[in-house]
Amino acid sequence: MKFDILTLFPEMFDSVLGASILNKARERELISINKVDIRDYTKDKHNQADDYPYGGGAGMVMKPEPIFEAVDDLKIEEGTPLIFLTPQGKTLDQKMAKEFAKEDRLVLLCGHYEGIDQRVRDNLVTHEVSIGDYVLTGGELPAMVLIDAVSRMVPEVLGSEESAIEDSFYNGILDFPNYTRPQSYRGIEVPDILLSGNHGKIATWRRKKALEETLLRRPELLKKVQLSKEDKGLLEEIKKEMEEGANG
Ligand code: 6GU
Image (cartoon, rainbow, N blue to C red):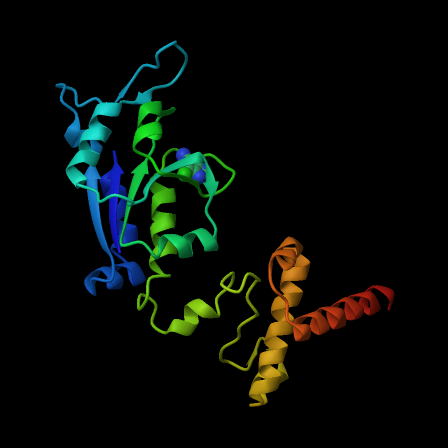
């Protein structure tokens, strides 16, 4: 997967992309990152990438020419997504990350200031993506979030394939609780079932806990996923236990 990042702040990406799994993925050439400084495509002596809005009003708008010229230089093949990170975009989710991971190349455009000249959105941008309902100072952090979410879905980026498959949200529901040594810490014990060595029972317990966490914290997710007959049985048990807990 090749990422091209169009940004006014290329240095912001160094720490995130230079550490941990993403750095290993880069070293193994499973992903590559090309940062493009939009300011390098400005022509005036102040290297101005923004300007006053036509029609007046507060705030500055990103100028079209440096962005168009930077995109020209990328020599993008037809069909390559050009993603503008903006709070106006569609909210990133796991399904979207998985879809983007199928591409060979993604171009990410990070917005700043009050906005961007509409001609960029109308003529270059193919997708607009937000990372949630809150406002950030720019599209750089969202671009890094997108790169992380997409890269870990690229084959071989994660150590073992299961770590992606069994993860939270991969199945559309929340994760089950995890424990490691010591077995007893400050008098707090690891659940006996996990020490039983009975893999069938452990799998059922984990599924039940995952369903319970999801029912308690994110019940709307249960409406979106395909539940097996066993899942439905476990959910019935959970609800019954919750009622018993409330009444007794
Ligand atoms: Cl993509 N950009 C900005 N500036 N703020 C955001 C966002 C994007 N997603 C959530 N908040």
